[in-house]
Length: 245
View 1: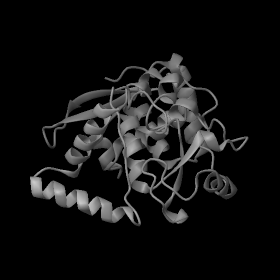
View 2: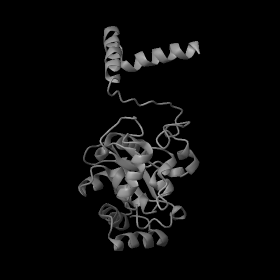
View 3: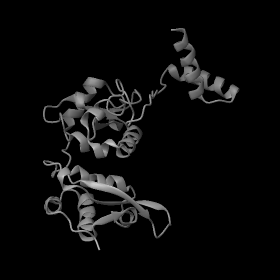
View 4: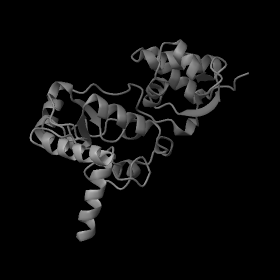
């Protein structure tokens, strides 16, 4: 038997459903209100093969969700089971979900950063670049959007956006919701950070373009000749340089 749903959460969930804007959030909420929890198997049955994103839509609406674990009766493997969280963690003002980003805002971002992926630095056709919140919506909402603050957003291609999304979704700060931790993370500010998803890691993504392609290929040939990866060659070169500084 599922535990009763807190009246505050029920009221907010029913408002999200009645508003009718986010089909994924509505589908998830209906199951949660009926059963008290929703599993990865349940979400797959609903047609959502990326469960964290579907559940993320509910969180984006300001409704706290806890992630537990169980065993799938189908596969016998461990799977996520989601349920309503602490009602004291409700985030007011999120019922409408994410705001639509105006086209002129993308133009402002292109003017500020150029037509580049802000993670890899790759110069790309502006049509493949997407606007992304530097700090996840679940933490800071649409901060900076109303006054078109380009410093609060970044441009990413689909692969960088997926990598960032996965890392953020699995970061403990999604539960802590500490803004300052996001402000010092690589995924928010790759140009100036102290951690990556709370881990003491440093990362440099490099896209080799134009004349630099030949440089990369020479390094790759050297790596192949030694039976090691390009990454290992670059680390060796960096260590040698650092030791002489």
